[in-house]
Length: 217
Image (cartoon, rainbow, N blue to C red):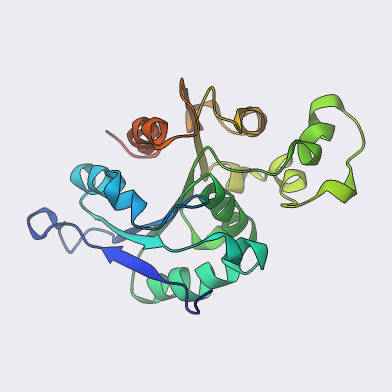
């Protein structure tokens, strides 16, 4: 692991730069397991965002699995990405994450809800079934099967947190059961669900739709 965490910044093309009088906005993107931060550029996520919303700068983060394994992902995001962004004058900061990156976005929101304006999670990994089974069948929570420890918070989301989460996933995604459960705790107009699996081809379709849930199109 590198400290500070490695990241890449993408400013809008010169011709598309917004009026300096408008609020500065930043999107921080966290990749999934096995993907590099550059995958967002490769698959058109950055272009899609900045073409329709040129007031956004983008930072992609090399947030690989070891940061989650060592439980340092939130600390590194906070110290190396978010706090410097606030200090440099960004008025709105959003985090987008796919799969494991979606978990990272949720973990950050739980610990620092006042530092971000919203998060966009695509097919987020939310732990194994044993971690949320108690919410499906009304059984006792099994403390021995906890890896993410998110569900007690997700199942009782304060309104201020709930309204900052936007969720998108494919109906055939391998995490769809957990994502369906999360959807029951969110406002209906914060959710995009479409046919598709846990693949970039699905996420590329979901991304612009998810942005439209938060920003006008």
